Length: 115
Image 1 (cartoon, one colour):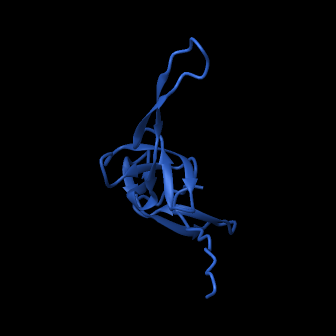
Image 2: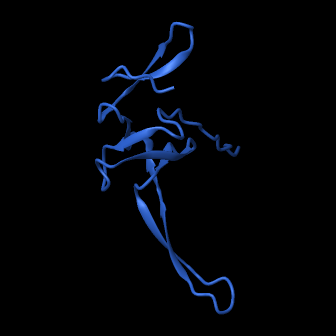
Image 3: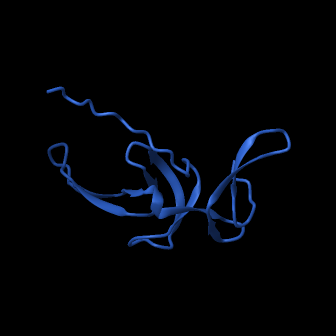
């Protein structure tokens, strides 16, 4: 019996690090924040101020006190939409070409160029 090798699948995600997005599903629905990290392997993104997790950290040295650290957890990329700061509206993304031939991302609702 041959063993099947696991293939790493890279998923194409519609948002990039630094984009402003709005959460459209889940406990944090409606929140707007910046994408801090993209995890293509699991199709997830880490958004500033969304899906906050608390972690209890033990003291590292003698006499030092432990602490509670809060950090953002990843959310699935299908639960976020690109957000226009100017128009205050979430929109899907379209790909278009500029006059000089560059391929850029554009918001469908507003026509705003992202890149």
